[in-house]
Length: 297
Image (cartoon, rainbow, N blue to C red; front, side):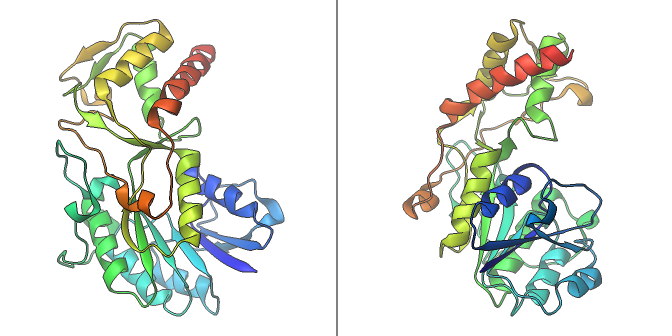
């Protein structure tokens, strides 16, 4: 029986990863959460309860246990990464950290893994409250890829989209266009990449069977400009967007980047890890969300 642990597995693509793993009859899935959110897994999974940021509680929860693969979807600080490096020594056959496109600074060319090198990044420590999201992910990578007794990979996801996106970032744009509200977009020509929630889960699932280590970019094939996203939303809603280069904070686009920000996935593809084409699913997702949001109104 293959034993899998997921730190954080009750929302969004973490939930989809659990469901994907449960399709394997010879896989036992354990989820570790704070126990504050209900899930639909019933007796199909084992459960551990601990606050991810409380290293003592985490140590108690995992004591005496071992897993073939540990997925860490909720590591946001160097202190959490250091605790994981210590606590999972001898307990994890393989460790997969969910990291982010945010480790990179934007640039006009595709970002390759070497554009942020966690192996040479200066180490420092602190709780998640003491570091930015970008710095937390950079340091988590640096620690888990250089300070562990187990093989590890760090998956750099861009913004993840889907009908199940609890952050509602794409919904935000559609709602603003439908309601005629101003939408702050600093650079409509900036290119961005995305991945769909089920695609992210499938990538993590496949990576669990792979021997690939180190940082790895993961996003759908292709890019789109922020302006093109707005055009798709206008087509789906029948409304004209009120685009402004500057707006109140509450009206600024969550996709409102000043420069292009997208990744090269050559490393993953050469390892046999495929991706969907962005153009095959994003227009359809926007159209579906436009209909559902209009009905809700």
